[in-house]
Length: 103
Image: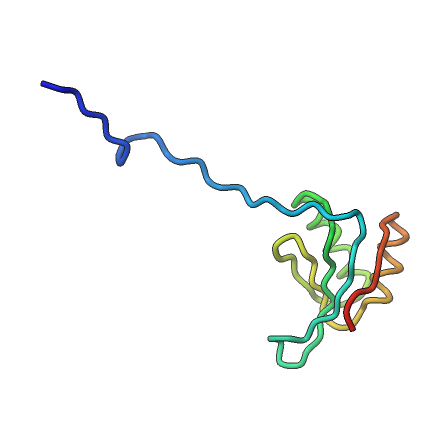
């Protein structure tokens, strides 16, 4: 009799894949986007090389400073409305290099 091993059942589980964020060039870009939002504009902050916890805290602080809502999606912060100038000033005070992108 031959002993047969099966990989389909048992306690061995495959490791979940980790999402790898692309490392940026150190410059934070703030875009304005209205596509897919029924004409409503949002300011999207891209290029932040922060972990999830500090990114979440920064998003909350920016939303509070701007007095509007927003969300955190795939390492990008979305702030409701066209707040690009105000966001640029706030991020530059924190020591980030910021550029306004898009129209």
